[in-house]
Image 1 (cartoon, rainbow, N blue to C red):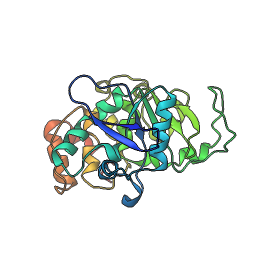
Image 2: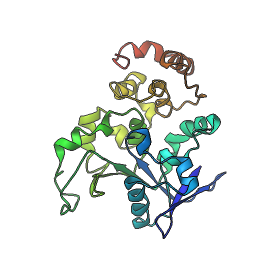
Image 3: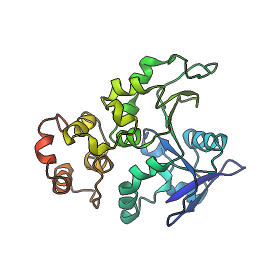
Image 4: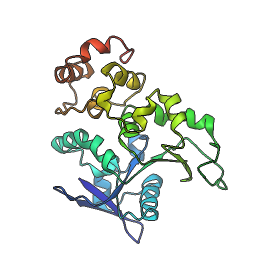
Length: 253
């Protein structure tokens, strides 16, 4: 696992950790923009990578007493298919083990004077409910895996956490309250878990299947280019009941 550190001069460095010891870290949950807008592993390696949300994540981690943080756009060398496969198969656990998970909502804005308290009403409820973050395939497992989810506006202002915003998250996503509170996913039927993913989208079609691996606690190699149907057939071999239950939802509608 590679982790980022924010340096005093505002640049970033990457450090790899192998084995059981991984230092406490924060992790970013966000929606990707256009390819040219995202900072890559190569950008960081060249010392040319920077962006508002990565700066936000690094600075927020420091505020929370964490020296390390992880961002999917630039902590994975996607030129290595083996590394990408390992990362995607590990991602649910990485979000689960993070000390803090920051949800950066780039399409939600609040007044700079807003200060969150546990009793504060959500100041941007409509924008929050309509955020693209709730429509993406990968953010489903991030929502469920992380127990320390904190939501921030595009200005980096805290809006609330997984507990204070629980009823909003449940209403928007349909994810059971018990699942949000940490009840093991094995306690929920396959049909119910599939229903949480219905109507979510991914940029790459195979990711419609790959983003479910953590939800079903299965591992399998990634074969980009195989197509969604073939990827689903491979997943169905891991979960025989899945083929029947998928027909009871509109997941592929």
